[in-house]
Length: 466
Image (cartoon, rainbow, N blue to C red):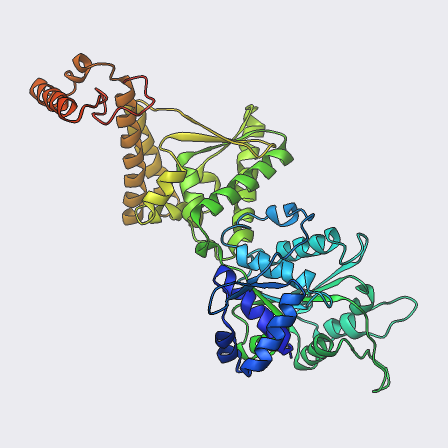
């Protein structure tokens, strides 16, 4: 069971910049106010929290790292300063706790990034010298032993011999990470929690009074869909709890960064640049990833592999990845385009091709298609989607999104081609051009401003048309 001090510290951590007042903490944790005040004074003296000079006093988390520390370890995580900010803050605090690092449990959907976060925690612990640089990092994924629960028990608590060391012994002075901890049986859960609370654990074939006290940081990970009673059992006795958001709960620009990173990694492996069209980028942004970041990465690997085979046989310079290189469920992401059009259009421009290379840079260029090519593109999309078994209604929605983006690209292209009002009058009735010109001149006289002849706006744009 976490101590009162640990519970108070956790509550303040979770409050973020808003902080907590003494009475709020006392009410939330059902601890007497004088006891809360005493613990808050201790945490303040230790530099773990700071208090405001206002009345009433508000307590917030102080710096979770030494001034000389470098945050680059966690900054490799996309979203470390946004959707993952609270998770990173708690992870740092768990490592840097004054009386020794606090055991931690991470609750998340499968594939949400638990393993990567744990690797960053271990690296951070090494960077700030909480553990030695060569300290062991021992992992046990319980799902690997789903059909043999006895083997899980043996791996964790088996008697040490000349030829075998259990995971607790292997992790001495380092970190023990137990993934899918909800798969542990009741006996093993109790033994794990006993260690979390007392620092002691019994091994097989020991006498009842024989306990071992390996010094290590224990990190558990559980799926958020695990049995509620099991989760409650862990979270009520493990001092620090971290929750990771699912991919569909993270900002879309973070998903774009993930796509960028994964495609750049594939470019490095293939030693070739990878080109992706705008339609494929939209689908990757919008399809449902049931296994979160892990699935997004896996699907991009598969799509690039399919494209590489085609490129290898055609001897092209770059790998060109198309929507047809991905499974149907990825392509169906385009059905969500209308719902998220504004967000997507801020990230993906119509008719653009994105180029990824090993430097993790993302470039884009517009490759406008003449109207005739657009018609051919529509026919091709219809045939491809029909051949893949899509329903007519879904085909219509996907093709409509395609046409909409082609049309917007076409309009933008026309705008760039209009140099003066003589050309404009070939596209629009001359009376309309005259009316707009006179209206703009009146506005210029009244407001003493100059307006762009093309866009009819306050002339602050950088367009060569002004």
